[in-house]
Image (cartoon, rainbow, N blue to C red):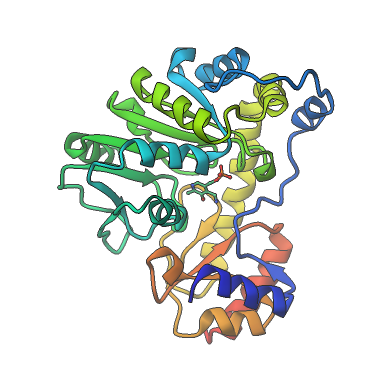
Length: 328
Ligand code: PMP
């Protein structure tokens, strides 16, 4: 089943519990909401982003502002980087975030899959440009440090999609800590519960930053100015926000691991679980009032992806319905 068909079925069924797409339910931080009310000027700006935005993001990552470029959300940054590396051998572990294949499809480029074991850990042995995503959508796992080392040792370059880096309840090591041949894709969609703002950043070596800015210029020219300004002024809220949402989603992940009677690898970040489920579980769950997404969309047939985007009491009810619907 493709994504559009799954969404059509979900819309038609009008389920009581929407645990399908990863749209955060926790309200955005008040600092951001306040900052967005102050429109300021709406002129063009530089394609690499406003100095104040680049400085704010550089501060989070401990890099220089010219190693940061603003993008219109993580997906836009991913597209810019995949375009830049289009002539290289691109690889990504499976299960994967389907957006990578949507981008590769539009650009007409190949993307090879790397197999993972029962704990969703890949073996990195081939040379190439890797696109990795930890904490991971759909599995919620993060790589132990030895695996990150294996990755950076074998990779020509790593595109590290870290849009869930602020939601961690286990160990998370960014490849950026171990190598300089890395471009981190960062986004404010999940950490600030604001995917509609379309703002993110790429943190990369200066030559790659220049190429992403060129991609900006060719596509949107300037990432939303007013949003960059608001995010820069609310950046102080980030450490507190990180703690708050890691605690909230961490409790939900615990509840899932305790309540769901499906075999699953316990997540250490993000807000998804990816249990093994019998055939037809997506349809049966939907009929029982719970929408999830079928694992085949993520390269994991025989699984379902559950987004933990409801409060715990609602999730407890949804998990009971799921257990029942899928005969667990
Ligand atoms: N990467 C991953 C792994 C995601 O899950 C998502 C959104 N669900 C994105 C990138 C893109 O997010 P955005 O463009 O909103 O920053």
